[in-house]
Amino acid sequence: MATLGVLMSFLWASILSGSLPVLTSLKYLILQALYNVYMHPLSSFTGPRLWSSTRFPYLFSLWSGSLAKDVRKLHLKYGDIVRIAPDELSFARPDAWHDVYSNRGGQSALPKSSLWHSAPPGRPSSILNALDPKIHTRFRKAMESGFTEKAVRTQESTIQSYVESLISRLNKVVSAGEGEAVVDIVKWFGFTTFDLIGDLGFGESFGCLERNDFHPWVAMIFSHFRTLTLRSSLRYYPGINWLLGLAIPKRMIQKQKEHWQLTVDKINRRLNLEKTRPDLISQIKLDEYGLQGLTIPELQATSSVIIVAGSETTVSVLSGRTNYLVKNCDKLALLKNELREKFPKGDSISLTALKELPYLNAVIQEGFRLCNPTPVGQPRITPPNGATISGRFVPANIYVNVHPLTMSLSSDFFHDPNKFLPGRWLLTSTQVEKSPFYHDKRDSVQIFGVGPRSCIGEPLAWAELRLILARLVLSFDIEEVNSVSGKLKWDDQRVFTVVERKPFEVRLRKRVL
Image (cartoon, rainbow, N blue to C red; front, side, top):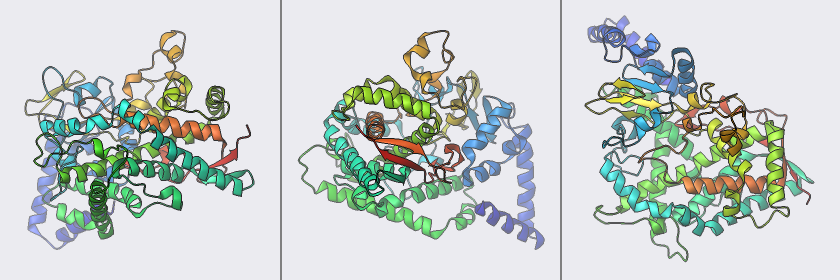
């Protein structure tokens, strides 16, 4: 919003001063907008004329943190394929997942765009921004052995220890409150997941649970996301991005630099540690020349991705799911009953046992649907010969995206889509025709993505989500709090690549066995 204001102030000042180059530029912009609406190769696709004429409505929505919700509104008005910018289409059809993100017909998946996904200047590539499919495959092969279900099981004792520490800390808070306490559960989920992924990824905890506070490196992460979103979006206008860039606070840019330097320092320290047990780093294949494995700079860049993806997104899903559970007491009661029947004494809780609990897993799946941590999707760009997506031919060099939020909340794909109904994911709902959920299109939710760039950390995420939620419900009675943060609605939060989480308070009461 501030960025747009800087640009418009500059333009109007130039007009009032009679600047001929600016008047010429405005004339060009008007002609370009008319061309975009009526003569552009995408002119046959439906969408709002303003968004189709110029990229600025899209950018304004992005910078304000409302893009996910705004695009959903456009889909509700214009249908399941919408033109959301002069050169971008948003899809809300399940088959688009594979058309956009999967290899098909002997052809590679649609490539990532350098505009959104290239490494920052002077920085090495990571698994996230390795644009060349061959290089990305090298990254994936070098890392995959550390992220299999088997590898996660070897880390179970470490995962269990951090979740036990979470429960122990919360018990102390509850005991100090004479058997009950109001806590910001988002903060506690953050302490746990960051400490855990710090241990697995860097060989040492961030110490958040111990200090009851976030490590400075962790505190920088969200400002890093916001800065990254703003800086990447400026690349749409390379000729004036220097001007738009003036609106990004210097402190945000400085924090992004500090975030990178702390990552480098932590990885260098980890490489000098002698570990008595394997962690994620020890299982990543290294190669000085970057032929069969990762170079040290590539490892540094990728480790930052591991920490963020392995914690930030998990916290969002845990927080959102807890938000819905305390507001739907009947669903929370069903989860309690399943867990407490399986583990009556609250012990002997293994990852293997949790995997077999149908309602726990249904709650997690419903959380994926309603609490996607990246609801704006992941843009791709069509190749020189174009591509067919959901039965429509899309010309070359067009940004395409599958919009997760729209599909998750669509009545075309889900019965009562705005309600938290974990039962839709139970086996009986998929097999019994009389079930109201029988016709739900569950494949429209793909929180871990599809294709060769799907999330490599899915097994670890499932392990964390199951164990943290199960231990919390087994240890405490959880209730809604009548406060501003206690009444927080999940979809009231802004999005800058990931959800900008606000505090969410719940009341914990010690469970009496």
